[in-house]
Length: 230
Image 1 (cartoon, rainbow, N blue to C red):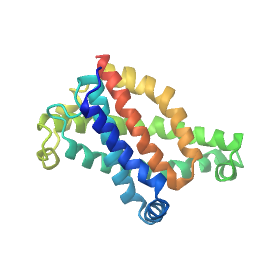
Image 2 (spheres, rainbow, N blue to C red):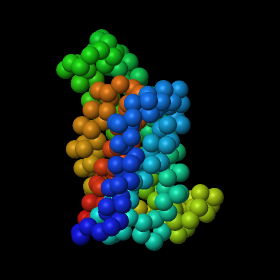
Image 3 (cartoon, rainbow, N blue to C red):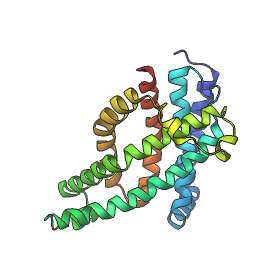
Image 4 (cartoon, one colour):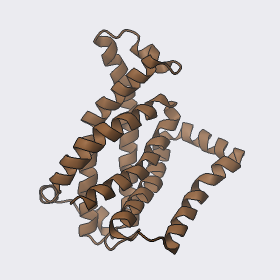
C-alpha cells in the first residue's frame, strides 16, 4: 500500500483531534467535566468519531480508499454513536455485575479488589469482567454492527439507510460467517478483546469509554484483515 496525500490528511486529522487535549490544559479539564456530567452523550461522540475513523482506516487497508463507494461516513457515525452508548451501558452493567457474581460464587473480596489500587486481585477481576462482557455482549454487538454495515452499503451509503427498516432475515443470511465466526469471534475475541478490555477495566470508570473507542480504531484494522481473508 503506497502512501498518498489522503494518508497525510488522515494523519493530520488524528493529530488535530488529540493534540489540543495534551497541549491545552483548560480544554482537557472542560472535557473531563463534560464527560463526567454527560457520559452517554460523550460515548456517542467518541464512538461516532473514533470508531468511524477506524473503519475508514480499515477500508484504506482492505480496499485502497478511505471512503469507497457505499461506505457512508455520516450513517456510520450515527450508528457507531448509538452502538457506543450501548457499549458504555454494557461496561457499567458488567463492571458492577461480575464482581457481585464473583462474590456470590465465593470470591468475597472481588468488589473491594476491583475498586482498589492496582493489584493481582484487581487484574483478575478485570479479566473476569472482560471475559464475561466479550463472551455475552460482544458477539451480539459485532453481529448487529455487521448487519448495519451491510444495510448502509445496500443503500449506497446515503442517509436513507437510517430511515429504511433493515430486512433483518435477508441481511443476516448474507453475513460471511466464515470470517465472522472463524476470525472475528474465534480469534479477535479471545486473543485481542479479552486482554484489551482487561486493560480497559483497570482504568478509572470515566476513562473506559474513551479507551474502548480508541480500540475501535484497532477494530477497523482487524475487520480489514478479516476482509482480506475472504
